[in-house]
Image (cartoon, rainbow, N blue to C red; front, side):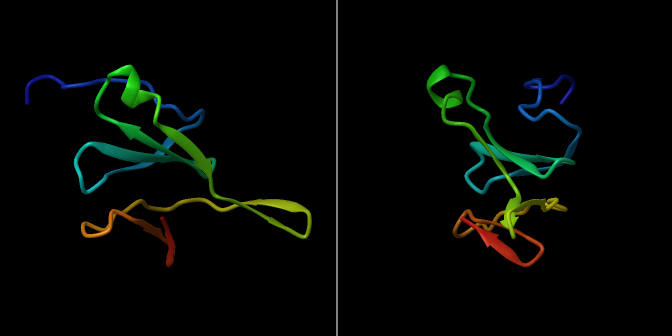
Length: 90
């Protein structure tokens, strides 16, 4: 590959921590140092891009927000689910 197929800005505000492609090869996820994760799609059509979403690894314990950093992203080939630090998010 001599030139990038696509270049784009991150949907996240802070530095990207890791990137992982999903098993279907149509989308990927990125996470940042702020504990947020974004599901992105390679297809640049407006219809597909409108489906992307961002969520946060936060928890509300005792009326205090706790940010849980995501150290790595990985996807199961069979079920296309993600896992980090022993927890599974579907």
